[in-house]
Image (cartoon, rainbow, N blue to C red):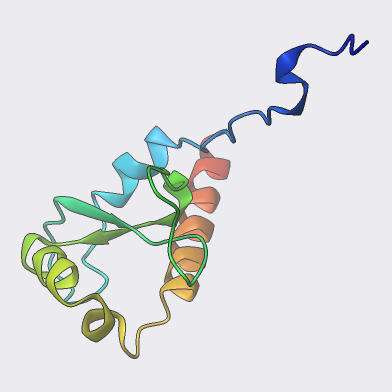
Length: 106
């Protein structure tokens, strides 16, 4: 007789890292593509180069600032847009800069 509950093999849903202060700060940064000072959109870079899974929200730490025009172009032609841009280096640079600013505040 099996005494285990039916859900014993269920895996917990992974938690998404949410950084509202970081996203607010990113909106004040220049577009990573053209340098425009007004960035209204943040593009979430997939955590894995092969892309994200269905219905998965990536961690906020993978966001990068894009202006309206670059954001639209990126969605139409993602391979062309990111060609020659090291997005993971940009992510690391933005996170480091933000962390240093936040650290000085405390």
